[in-house]
Length: 246
Image (cartoon, rainbow, N blue to C red):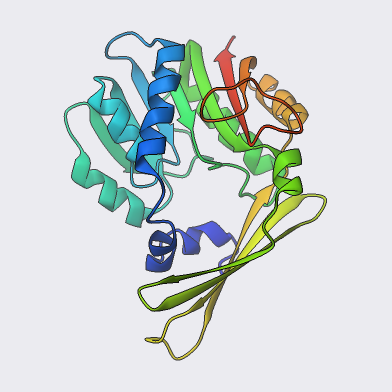
C-alpha cells in the first residue's frame, strides 16, 4: 500500500467499480436544494474540491455557473474531462496545495471527501488552500459524515458481487478514525487485493476551530441531503455552510 491509501485506491478500476452505482438522482436533488438555499448569481464561479468524475460539477455547470473541478485522482479527472464545456473545466490537483487565489464565489467539498490525511497539519493545509481560493465574502459548503451518528449506525461487515468480483467490506472505528477494509476477490487475479479507507472523526467542534483559523465562519448547519436542521445525535450528515470573512 501507498503511504497515503487514497493515492492508490482511488485510481484503481476496483474503486470505480465498487462505487459506480452512487445515486445520480439523489446527488442532483441535493444540488438543486442547495442552490435554492444559496441563491448564487448567474455565472457565479464555483470550485468543486475532490470532484471525482464530476457528477456534482456537471450538474452545476448545466445550471449556468462557471465551475472548476479538482481531484487528486488522474483516473477520475480523465473521465471528467470528457464532459468539459465552456463553463466547466477539470484539473488533477491535491487539495492541500494552493490553487487559484481569491477567485471563486463558492467552494464545495461533497460526500465526505475530506479527513483522509494522517495528521491535522494536512487538514489545515487543505482548508487554507480552499479558503485562499475564495473571494472575501465567498461561501464554503463542506459535506461530512456526522461522527456520533456514523459510530452508532456502523455496518460492521457486508459483501457485494459485481461482475463475478466479490467485495468483502469490514468497518470499524477507534478514538480517532473510521476504517473500511475492502477485500477484493477477482477470479482473473492470482491473489486477493486489499485496501483500507480511513476517515478522521472530525466533529463540529473540530471543524469550528479548523475553519475559524482560516477566516471561515460557520453560518448554517444542515443534517441531511434534504437540508434538515442539524441534530448532533440523529443527523446522518454534517453539512457546513461557512463564509470567508477577512
